Length: 301
Image (cartoon, rainbow, N blue to C red; front, side, top):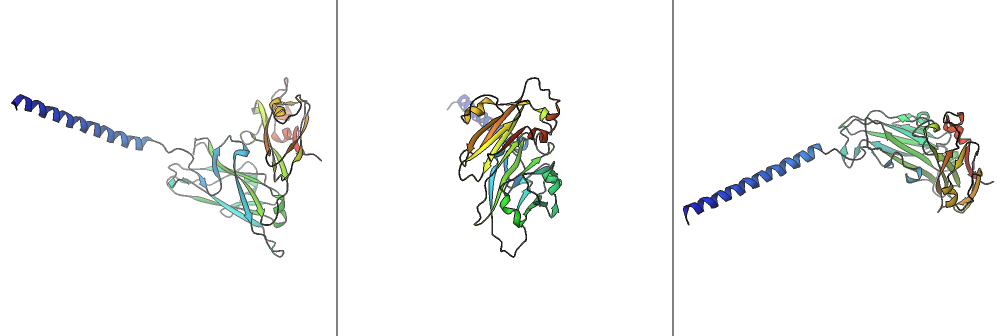
């Protein structure tokens, strides 16, 4: 082989080796950079019962947790209890940020108590929410909660809604963890119940902040159809005609509509609009309690 040819071949081989080395180095650096700069996704809060859901999600999208309790003897007058925990880890990884959240409890019947790590937080949790102690970054922290229901009240408790919402400094994913607890005693059939909920009530304490009012109506333990009545004051609001069409009712802002609900058709989201000329500063829009007097939902008597 001629000397020039040998030199050319050796040069080509050296160039290829160098190129492979550059590609390998680039690939290695890119991989390391990717691992170092990719933030963890999702919410760094987890629970044995509460499930991750968007903060703006409707209540009917929350996970249902049926809690079956052992029936107590006639002589045992201690309350029924069940518990759950919340911790700052997810998929085995501890949060890299300090976590703080607020726990709120909806539809908490009278005399039912909720404790966090042995401390009674019922008043806060059932009101504006109970802010939990800070969970330090890189330190696995667990908060234990217990709900106590008086024995003579257990059959009146159909559903308790619990959610833990992280503050903006702890998490910006827009998610939270929540669930609908439905406690019952083995061998005892829970009774029928219903409720209407303004789903934006947890976002702002003033209805006037919204262009429309989203009202969720639900029935629980409906083993047979129940005739329900939805009423609204036509001096202030009008109902979305799409809902009337969905349930097969006549169109128009009549102020009252009757329709059946059962286990299959157990929830609807109804939207109401303020009438033209109704200023957002009107007194009836100053609180959700006042709006609840204008829009009502109940079983037909």
